[in-house]
Every structure is written in structure tokens, then in C-alpha cells.
Length: 305
Image (cartoon, rainbow, N blue to C red; front, top):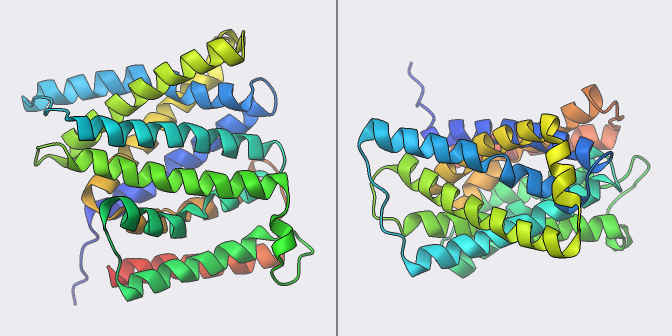
């Protein structure tokens, strides 16, 4: 008996989730001890840009490829994705100052169902009824995980606080970012998904770095110097950011963004493990049930695609 081989996008999505979990862990450490939320966000772009440039140059040299034409549509999608990702990351890092690591990532994961709606809005993409059912099941798991240790049931008043606002806002912004990146990569006339992903990533990170330099220079004087002073930790944020972003971009190039984000929910399980083992945060019975539901939704998603 033979089993079907998983598609490449599944492997790179899992890798992206691992990289992203480590990167957010490092950003939480910096944001709660050294840098502002914007400074911790900036560190991922400024320290990843050189690595991305070298990696792209090496790939072009090794394959003999050339950079495809970058149309106005590419830059519009790239700028929208880059700007919304900056705002989304600031929201998540600010959230880490208010709630624990696992809860912060949980709120961020509301992006999954929102990515479906944004994909329909921007790209006209849809998902099957079974795929939508898997996403909905994952949302149930997220709702279970979103309550506190003593929470019973679901109450709208639980959302009436700064932490929930930051988390839901990050989900909306990350959804726009994911779909915009897919839109940008699809405008490139190349059959090589790695080249399309690398070029899109390099262009977006360059724009993000420039935007944040201007913002920090005008709004938070001295923060750029603090980011440089924190380079021993921040450089690892850059490396994990590069690895995660490259994997996400490859996945978005190969598959519908809604499916990629749904499978990427595995990041939440990794974040709960990080909370328990690294940050020493307690996991409640409700959170454990939510994790189980989330795993079921991920397995269902893989089966229906």
C-alpha cells in the first residue's frame, strides 16, 4: 500500500511556522526588556535584508536566472503587503506586553478565517466547502484557546479590551499581507516559484526597512540606535525572519493563501510549547482541548486538499 506524497507547500509551511515561532519568541524578549514594539518589529527587517540579498544573488548566480520585470501591479501589492505586515507585527509585539506568549499568538491566528475573505476580495480566490469546514473547525479551536483559565463559554465582553483589539487587528492586517504577497508573486512572469518568492521577499523587505527607518527617525528618536545595541539578539531575529518569510512566500506562490494560513495554525501549538517550556506559562484544560481541536482542523485541511 502506498501513500500520496505531501506537496512541497506543506513542508515549507511547517518550516515557516517553526521559524516564525522562534522569531516571535526573540521579539517578545526584546520588546519586554529592551526595545519598543516598533523597534522590535524593525529589527526583523533591518537584520534580515542583508541575508535575503545575499541569498537571492547566490540563487541567481547559481541558476543563471534573471530578475523578472516588476510591474506597477507588483509594487502596489508589495507595498500593501509590506505596510500591513509592519502594522500587524507591531500589534502582536505590543500584545506580548499585555498577555502571555501563547495568548498573543492565539489572537494573531484569527487571520486564518479572515484570509479567506480577503482572498475573495483581492484575488477572487475561493475554497471548497470541505476546506471551509476545516478552517471553521480551526476557528472553534482558536475560540477555545482565547479564553482565560477560568473562562466558561464564549462572551462578547471578553473582546472588549486592548489585548483583544490588538490581536484581532493583527489578524486582519496579516490576512491582507498574506493575500497581497501572493498577488505580488503571481504578477512575476517566471515558472520558478523560488525565484518569484525570493524577488518578492527582497522587494518587500527593502520597502519595509525604508518605511520603518523614516517612522522611527521621526517618531521614536534613539530607537534605531537601541536596535543596533541589541544586535546580538536581533541578528537572530533577522535570520529566523528571513527563513520564515522565504518559506511563507514560497507557500503563497504554490498554494491558495487561505489554505497556507490554515495549515500554518500549527504555529499555535508550537507557541504553546514555547510558553510552557521557555516562558514557564501554565496551560489550562480549556487550552489543551483547543489544541486538540486545532490539530483536527489541520489534519482535515491536509486531507481535503
